[in-house]
Image (cartoon, rainbow, N blue to C red; front, side):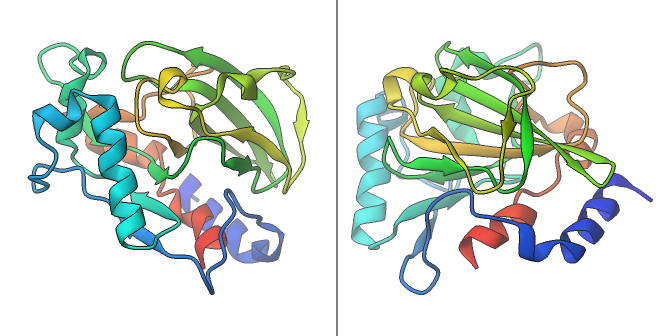
Length: 231
């Protein structure tokens, strides 16, 4: 059985044990879908080149729609990554997003959705990168799954150690401010990964389009988990 099928089956059998990733009340709170493709003409180079302006654009969308968070991004071909040389690797730039982003104020808490241990953590602090990053390792009845939590506060890394147990439901991190999250508007990058391929404290959250199939097989849709937060 393929890893995705194993994960889907495990989630069906353990759905009552899955917890939230962020605070959200489905009966009262709203999500606003944010589009970061070329179809979004509001995100001009002037906006993207100025992190404060970019942050104000996101905040304005959430406030005007009375939404608690902005949401989206899995398999999205994003033009916004041209703001950072970090994504311009080799002959083909990286533009395909492999996680789901939850956009909201800096400082909001992040929770662990199921019992896990710390695999690795790192401050990926170059412009356009993750900033504070924590990767948790989950053993789901023999299926190993990793979750990468990116754009966290640097303080979220304090007190961590490899192998430290993070129980289900525990608040273990907070969203970082732009100055420490890779110079992005505050948000959580949440990504599921089957095989970390030897990486520690980091894994590509954006890939080259030509490598789309391999990466999407290895990085299943985070909505599999986030459904338990938002529904």
